[in-house]
Image (cartoon, rainbow, N blue to C red; front, side):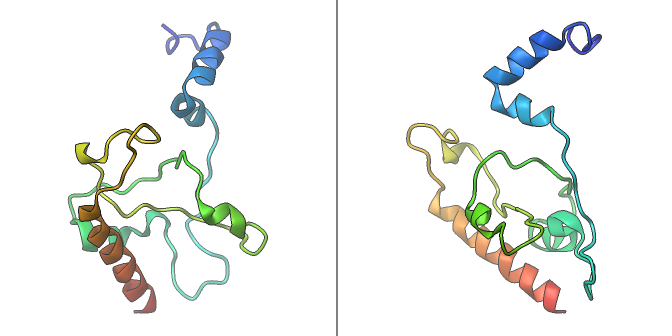
Length: 125
């Protein structure tokens, strides 16, 4: 109903967004830079080649809005652009995000390490 005529139901859509942070985030405009200015190498977003190297060619790479705070906010005064990527594979063993007993299983840690090691290898190649 809301999708067919969003202008007519704008107040209701806004109320739903106030109740659901994920919906609220999806209704905002985002931008995605695909090349760093003055870079010697392409810095294509979600570092596609590294993602395929680590997780396989059947993985679909696409931008997504990261809906949580990170320490990157402390770098805003010294970095013009900050890109966030989570090099993990989430499954049911994680529990609820930001809920009771929130956790990242130790078995996922090698995936983080492998991703960022490969990212540095690809960048220096």
